[in-house]
Image 1 (tube, rainbow, N blue to C red):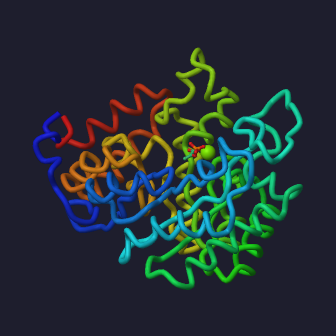
Image 2 (image 1 turned 90 degrees about the vertical axis):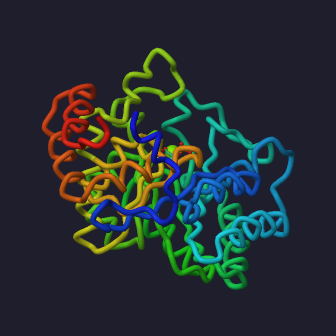
Amino acid sequence: LRLAAIAESTGPGATADGHRVQLLANIGGPDDVAAAVANGAEGVGLYRTEFLYLDRVDEPTLEEQRHAYHQVSVAFPNGKVVVRTLDAGADKPLAFIPTAEEPNPALGERGLRLAHTHAQLLADQLEALGQVHENDPAELLVMAPMVADVDDAEFFTRAVRNAGLNQAGIMVEVPSAAIRARDLADIVDFFSIGTNDLAQYTYAADRQVGNLAAYQNPWQPALLDLIAMTARAAAEAEKPCGVCGEAASDPVLACVLVGLGVTSLSMSAPALPMVRAALARHDLAQCRAAAEAALGERDAEAANAAAKEALPALM
Ligand code: PEP
Ligand code: MG
């Protein structure tokens, strides 16, 4: 790939004609910040806070939480840090929360759903985040996992505002949220599309079952359609719409996502230079043409091939 030669490019993300696309890092905690900074991340697009809670016998204290959020926030004084509230459930069980055995953990009481039965967990987390937001320079945004409908979005947005935080977003990772994105866009401040779970739920294929991995391919046409719908609804409501699933780390698909109207891309840090280089080599019109070409195909392989053809600097 010729991109490798220019992957040293640094600076904020943009297409060749200067259309800005924030390039952000997915992190699991303060230990991942160094790699994010080294690869030129403009901020954090997905802070998976569950690692603070897993593998321990008690809930992290407010002080422990504040410390972790602060360490991440100070690393990006001029950037933004998007913190995802606890994403646990029967698939990622917590020792201090008795969860019933569920026949279908991916479809169960997980993500934001856990906050209905364990309200204090969310309240504590938002309190810690609110305090960090008050004192730190970074722009601190909070989003919820597993939001399915307007009730979920309203419940979360209210809780975030009550904690003194001013930016409440949602992961769009459940098909119902993508299909009715225009309703949700009126309620929340931003979207972040989680393509890993969105693929899992769209194709009814457990992402942990290796034999079903083909359904997890982010080039699948039904997934691209849902991303397009979500990005369009966000644009109409003038709200930002990022992607923080695996899809964002594929340089070709990153161009397609920008062409679909996605405004930021968040990925594991090592993927940032190649994505930055791919965007810098194409203008917005080419990204839109690639998106159009991909949407016109009927399977993942053809969508990928059509997009590549529309993005000459990747060939
Ligand atoms: C996703 O579902 O795409 C996502 C980014 O979140 P996670 O992989 O943590 O479920
Ligand atoms: Mg997810």
